[in-house]
Structure formats: C-alpha cells, structure tokens
Image (cartoon, rainbow, N blue to C red; front, top):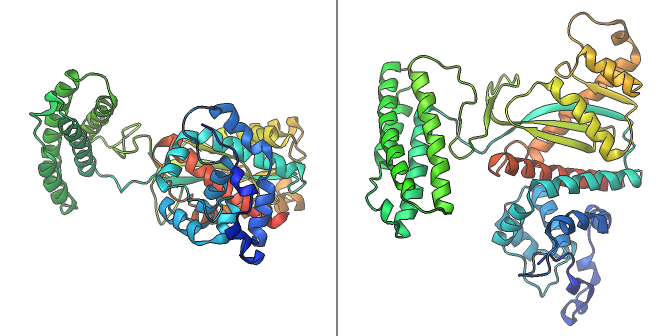
Length: 438
C-alpha cells in the first residue's frame, strides 16, 4: 500500500516535548531542501505508477526521498544510512521520523528502490528542475553539454576470468536448485574448483602467450561441459525464477565461450563483446583518458545551465557518437524547462556544421560548437571565446559528481539499475545546488 506522508510526524509526543527545541532545528542546507520538497507535485509520479490501497504500507514517500538524498549526498551505504539517521535527531527530523518511531530497515529501502525503478527517479528530477524554474532559481539561458563514462561495478575482464565467472555463476544457480530438491540437478558435477585453479594460473601467465592460450582452451572445455549439463537440467525443469535465471546465465556463458574461441584464433575485434557475466550490457569505452585508456560501463550525456543545475541526463549503452546526443539533449532541456536556451556551448565531439545550422534555425542566438579543421571567423570573436570558457566549467561539475555523488561507478547492476543510480546522484546534487542558490 502506497503511503505518501508520515502522519505521526505532525504530532509531538511527550518525550519530544521535554527536549530543547534547538535539537530539532535543521541546518541551513537541510532546511531549504525540506521546504523545497514540501510540494505535492513530487508525490504525483508515485501516485500515478504505484497507487494501491491494499497490502502492507510502504515507507512514506516523503521519508524515502529525503533518505535517498542523504544517502547519495554523503556517499553512504544503506546500512550505514540507517545507523546515521538513528543516531541523529536532526536527520530524523529532516526525514520526518519521530524519535519514538523505528527507522526503515536497510532491506526495506533496497526493495523500495528496486520497485520504484529508473522512471520514477527521472520524473522526480524533471519536477525538481521545473520547480526551480518556477522559483526563478535557474534561468536556463546558457547551456553546456558534455559526456563522460559511468563505470560498471565489475573487475577488469580477461577471457579466463570471464569463463571462470560464468562457470561459477551457473554452478551456483544449479546448487540452489539441488538444495531445493530438484531431481534434475542432483547429478550435476560442480567444476568451479577446476575453473578457479586455471583462472589463477592464467593470471600468473601474463606475457606467456602459448601457456595462456593452453589454460584458456582448458577453461573453454570445462565451460562447454557446464553449459551442456545446465541445458539438460533446464529441459527437465518447470518454469520458475531459478530456471529462467539458469537459462539467461547459460546463454551469456555460451556467448563468452564463442568470443573466447574467436580470440584464440587471433580475432580480437569482436562486436558487442561481453565484459562481465554479472552485467552483460556493460561495454568497453575509450574516452581519451591517458591514465585509463579503456573503461567498462556506459556513456552519460549531461546538460547543465549557467547556475550549474543539471537539467537533463541520458545514460547510453555502448559508445554512441557525441554528435548523436546533442539535439536530443537540447530538446529534453526545452521540454523540462519550457524555454529555448539563448546560447549553447559544446566541445568538438558534439560539433558539426549541420548541428550548428539546426540550432540557429531553432532560434538559438549564440552557438559555440568547436568545429574541426581551420578556425572559422566567428571563433575569434569575444562572445565565442566566453562561451567556450563557460563550456569548460562542466568538466568541474563532472569531477564533482564522480568524487562526491557516486557517478564514477554505478553500484546497481544492469542498464536500468545504472540509470537509477545516476538519477539518484543527480537528484542529490541538484537539491544541494538549489539549496545554495535559494
């Protein structure tokens, strides 16, 4: 059952009445954010998608949103978040939790986050920008756009480690089926130990190509045996959660086997290569970072105003060209803010002559796209140079988001989970920035 507000919070009990009022006073930042979130519009997405009057009551939505802000503002885990709120009267007051009420359990918050999903967080972020625009916290006249990488929460992939991970994952699922009493899984032979030994040998065989290829070939043989056993077990299973999970893991392991065979034959250019058994949608990305030439994850496009408020974000699978992301980012900014930007600035990755003409036709007065090749005449003018200096400021925002708001690495699995992680981080950043500007 959806619960929007904590009704008990409106009543003061005898225990709280005997404490000094100063203990309940919020600091400047939390007070402004609390006032900003006290708006029924932030309840509308939850009412639209999860309005139910039956079942066990959920964590009040107003409490959930404030707890997620504190979590991503301070980089806390769920269990640590619960402990910190439990120990702080001010944080309890901010989250609308009375001193005599229990704090929502960490597992309850995890389930709520999974249930709400990426779409709810995206809508909340749009409503935050909409209200900030109404309150004239942001003007949105100047826009800067850039992209970066959000890493997946995976280890550095090698062919040997991927095969070992796949064997381990499939074997673990079959072990659960065996434990549940499934007759089809009783005769399964667990080859995890053999795979682990060979993966360890492979990690110590760097630079020894012949030895590494031999170990990898042995792992391929073990993986094929595990896949064969898994398919036979799946054919004898009835439909269920573990059966579906086993089928998916088997398909991924088969794909890893095929790409490893390609590598062993000398072909290292494999499209849509799997880099993780546990996050198969993650992709290798090259973003020109000299320290880390290749990162594994997803590409994030950010749109920021002159007030350093993120008005739009889009997390993409793979590594699409920046030029493909420019116009959709500007259209999303217009939809959210209801206003065409006066000026747009990007780096050379987003720039093209067609995009410049399109933006001018839309009505953008100043377009500072750094086109490749010889400098154009307008690139020497002062307005262009000012906008390019303005564009450079988004690099600082990206650095801050990665260092303080968790956007360096997504701790949620899959594309949907990563979008939710990024959305929560940007929500915390925007709220903190709005509190500074208000």
